[in-house]
Length: 608
Image: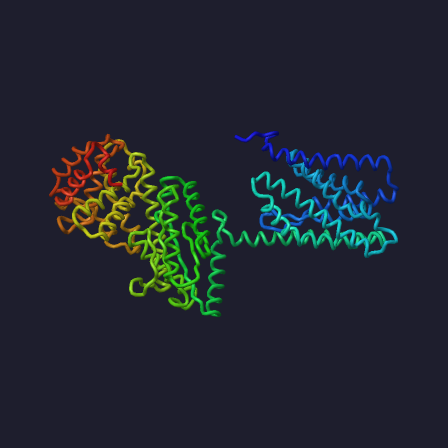
């Protein structure tokens, strides 16, 4: 570990000490010179005025860059002018005291105050060199010589300031001096020109009539206030178009950029592509790892998308992003593939993205059409395995009408609400926590064991998840009763399949709603609500019936402890052909055997 002095690396401490060794004695010598030869009342008043103006300027810098990290002070206008008009012995303490007061008021660290006070003193001394070398420029020498003195003093002031600051940056960050000096010189060039002109004007106004300096001071500080107001307005405008979490452009910025791209494409005939990006199973990430990890994933993904080759990235909301690329869909596909490979290596948690790609004007006539096609391509990607990109093709993707999209959006929102209701029902009683998710996994496994197609297996998973949604209307006192229910109470419980069916009405998830309505029917016709028997009961309902019964037996309940897996299997087999579908029971047994059967709930959880 590198040695430190006063909490900073020894090389940096040595550099600051060397600067202080020059600057602080210069301040002391200036104060001694003033004490030996005190100024006249008029000169003292003039120095005091320039000090007040310099201090005000230092306390109210002009922000010139994003984040307020490139503030520019017009302090040196008054420091350089004082150096030429009054000499080094006044300019050096004026500059040092101005910086010292500003930094103390800002509660800066002592070591930083010492360095900045010393470098301001040295820079002020440098600004005085024309007077030290060639004598006083005021009085009868004329405005031309005074202006030359000011310009030379300003150049020396800026050069020494840049050298000293670049040196401390170079030492502190371990970089080459020229890599710190040259950017600083370029950055300060425009500032130097502005300061030089203003200092020359201030000096000539003072020489003509001191009171005329007020003609310059007023506009200067008005400019400072205006610049600060303009900066804050610019920051506010940027914030309104920036996503707070990722730092990417937000949905408003995305819409504006999309319009600009379309206008450019119409003007130039050049094609561009839109990629709609969606994080796969983002809710699972939040639920499993917590919302902080979810936010970390979004931030990391934002950085990756923002660095995409030739891309312009936006966060449109939630876990959805957009990327704009120049060129056709093939080029966009190649670049987004690189993004997906980078995302796969995030390491925070397993993260994948699905992407839909469409191009303008090759595949769309306007912004709305382009977004619909990219959304359609994304929908295809999400429903064909996820973690993939798809370029829109009219032969593969059907683009829904605006009315169909509105209906689909409403349907998905209501379906999400239904899933939330189920989670709420499960959460009301610790003994049924994760009940619906376990039934969902087991129902899907039974369907797969029976050789059902993939779409039906997915429907079984959803049906198993939603099968108890009707229990939202059952009092907690019945759901959590630690005893056998009375006939009247059991009749209330029996209402939940019909209530669940009514809650799912209009969601367009048939035949799942029918399965939920009939998932308590018995094979022999003794179940409820409609006493269906045998194959009159929909297959999905029969499968959910078996999965629900198995999970219920192998889980703790208020009125009994969990039964063993062997007990639950025996019960299913003993009641196959009366309560349960024989084939569904056999499928459960096969699933459990394939997943290394354990006691209690472990087999069921193996499917989750």
